Image (cartoon, rainbow, N blue to C red; front, side, top):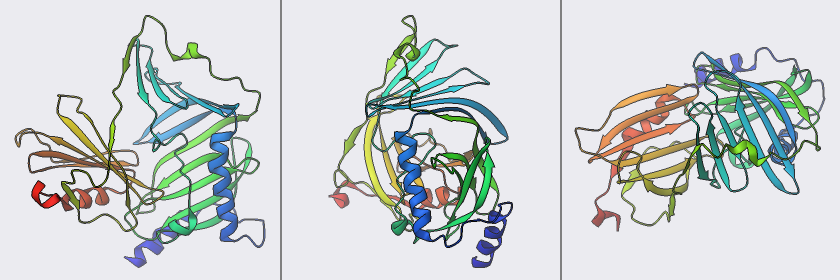
Length: 328
């Protein structure tokens, strides 16, 4: 296994020009990543990016503003079905112009925003990933510093981040699987950083003749409350982040949602009560996201995450239902 890991790490590093700055250390990598997380949220910028996944190429336009500590973001599709997502401090608003529908959900503290970055604690993550300065590149006519995030086991993906040399905004993100193959890519083709970009107009949220749906927010529950599920084979470092319950979309039954993370990768597990004849046992994949469903004690259990297929399958097959008397 270690030999295989070393082989694909070699593939991971190909095609990057050597770094020209001498004396770079892990601390410098940490500084770049810290600046990236801050810049994504505190700078005003707009541009066009492409998203490559599952042999499909989507082109999208983004506007992000951070005026008077109020952060807003609008992403609009430029090809395929017209769709628009607007995020502000409180809500995520999805607009489908062709169907004339608007869906509003309450923003959750664990929601990822484009470009899917989380605060990175290198001291914690270093047990599971190696961080390297790989070199320099040019993306969207801007100079970029390239950082590799290399997993220490085959249970999580690796990443290549191309950060704008001026602002540390991620100009390009490659997601790399355990075989050293790219499974998804996000890349800017144009980007403008400008504090004068105006705040997003409420008129963009939709028209008065649209059908509006306000989703009921999930109810967060304490980790120690009504514990009926045991996870026997979570990858090392994955810790419980949040548990919520909400009505299932197809019935009045509740659906439980549990989120685990190692600080970078995230696993979601969904539990929905179904009859044994209605459950599904199957795997599915969309770009870097893998899912695996299984029936356990009359529940449909689905594990989803931006992790390798074997990871979601192993986690799903290791879940154990605990009788209430045992859980108390």
